[in-house]
Image (cartoon, rainbow, N blue to C red; front, side, top):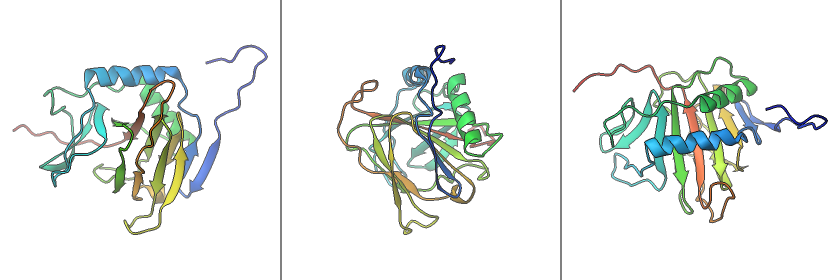
Length: 220
């Protein structure tokens, strides 16, 4: 978008948190991003999935792209089909794909071509326990995480669950990119505090872009 004549906009602030981790403040401020997210949620509504151990997650999830992340009693996996509908996940909107590619490039990770976008919806009290993103085929590609709506506290640790964690405050439109030596770092989100965001109301939406495949799909 071209700024009005005579008006200058400063680029989003960029913070290098550690080797392989970059925070891009306000990078996802384009209103078209929210429009695209709502369209995906209309096509494949977020739902609270169960872990293999039977725990029902407090975060509601959906996906778009060639592959969606799924958890149930059989395990964690990427699947080209939404288990709730039996149909492919919605295609990844161009504005979301562009956002992920530009953020990765700004953080120093070129040629990022995400094939999966996990969309997490947090209500007040919802949290995400420390975990690693390791179901993907190629750990050379980064993770691009976009925060929308209510502010949250992101916890970023090391490659062991017991490593100390760094708390990072995330606001609407912030984008966190991590890869390289930080690609398999444990991370999570503290319980979301109650509030009201002017665009999204009492919730937080997180978009997590990954290069998950390719995976061979076998028929039952």
